[in-house]
Amino acid sequence: MKKILFCLAVFQLFGLGTVIAQEIPESEFTPLFNGKNLDGWIGNKTAYRAENGMIVIDPKGGGGGNLFTEKEYGNFILKFEFLLTPGANNGLGIHAPLEGDAAYVGKEIQILDNEAEKYADLHDYQFHGSVYGVMAAKRGHLKAPGEWNQQEVIVQHPKIKVILNGTTILEGDYLESSKNGTLDQKEHPGLKRSIGHIGFLGHGDVVHFRNIRIKELPATNN
Image (cartoon, rainbow, N blue to C red; front, side, top):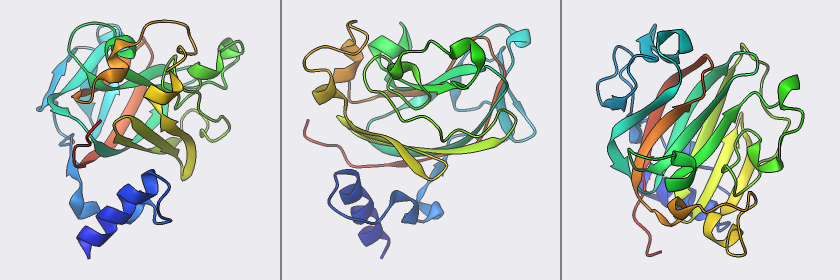
C-alpha cells in the first residue's frame, strides 16, 4: 500500500493522477532536524541556532549567511513549517553547492514576507515560493507574520512543485521555463544541477523553522 501511495504521489507531480503527496505516510519521511541541535547541518551556526524545537536565524547572532544539510539530495519531497517576522527575507536552497550564491549556482525558492510595504515593487519572480529569477509563484496564500506556515516542495528534476498552506503556488519545469532566457535575464547555471545540498539562505532577518522532514524520490533520466 505504501508503494502504491508513493507512485501515485509522483504521478500527481506530472499531472498523471489526482492523489496529492500528503497521502504518503509521515513514517516515510526522515527528519532533517532533531529539534535539539544542528547536527547534520553545516554553515553559519552562529546566526542559526536550535531553540525550543526550532531552527532560528537571528542576525544578532552573526548576520545572515547560509545553513546547509551535510547530505546532498536529488529528487525529494520536503516538508517544513516556517514563521516569518514582519518584512523577513530568507530562502530555501536546493541542489546547491557549498560555495557561491545558491540562487544562481543552485536554485533558491523564496521565503519572504512579500506583503510587507518595503516589498511593494518586487518583480513577480521574487514572490514567496518563486524559483528566484526563473519562475513566479502565486501570491495571497501566506499567513501573517507571527503565524506558522506549512510548505511542501516536490522536486523531480527538472520539475518542481511548491504547496503553501494546502494551495499549489508554483508548478512547472525550470529548464523549460528558462529555455528562452530567465525572467531576471541572468545566468543560472545551477538550473542544470540535479543534486546538491538543501539549505536556508539568510538575508539578515529573524525567521523560525520547524518540523523539517524529507522523502527522497528516485532519480530521473534528465
